[in-house]
Amino acid sequence: MRLHRSILKASSTRAMPREKTLREDLLLKKWKIRRGDKVMVISGKDRGQTGVVSEVSRKTNRVYVRGLNLVFKNVSKNKEAPSGKIQKEMPIHVSNLALVDPTTNQPTKVYIGKFVDPDTGAKQSMRYSVSTGSVIQRSLDLTYQKEWKDGAMDTDPDVVNKITFQSVPGVPPFPEDVMRELQNRYKKHY
Image (cartoon, rainbow, N blue to C red; front, side, top):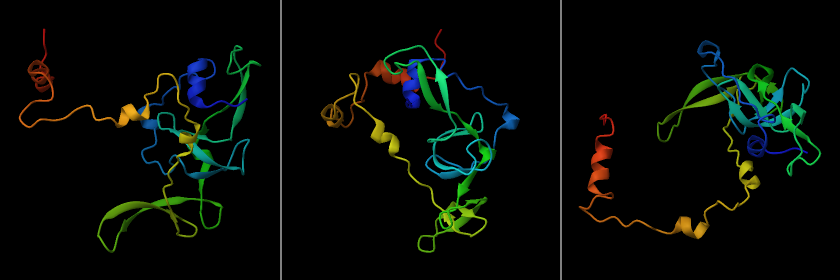
C-alpha cells in the first residue's frame, strides 16, 4: 500500500524521519531540476526508468521521483496501514538523475542560457538541451491537487469567497494600539 507523503508524516515518525541537512559548502548553488520535470535515473537500482519529480529537497540535494526508488517500511498497524507495511518513495540524489530531452525522450545535459523576447525585449533564463539545443520548458505540476480531499477542518468555499472587510478611507483597518504596535514592531518592549 503506497501512501502520500503528507499522510506518512502525520501517521508515524518511523515512516517519515526528519531529513538531515547538509553543510553549506556541500549544497548545490544552481538547480536545473524542478518539480514537475520529467527525469531519467542514470544510476542505481531504477536505472533507465523515467518519472516525474514530485518534490525537491534542496537541504539534502535530493529529489523525490513519483513511482521510483520504492521501499517497504514496517510501521505499527493503524487505519492507514492495516498490514503494518507501507510502500514509500525514497529520495534520489540529483547526480543520479538527468533531465529528459522533449524532442528525443533521451537523457541530456542542460545549460541555462538567456532568452530575449523579440517583441517585448524581456530577458529570462531558459534551460536548453546540450545535445539538440531545444528548450526544456518549465512544467506546472498540478497532480497533487487531484489528491486533495476535504476534511473536517477545511473552510467551505462560500465562506472563503465571502467579503468580510470593507475598507473606509481615512479609517485604519485595526485599532490604534494594534497599529502602533505594528509600526514599532522592531522596538523592544521590556
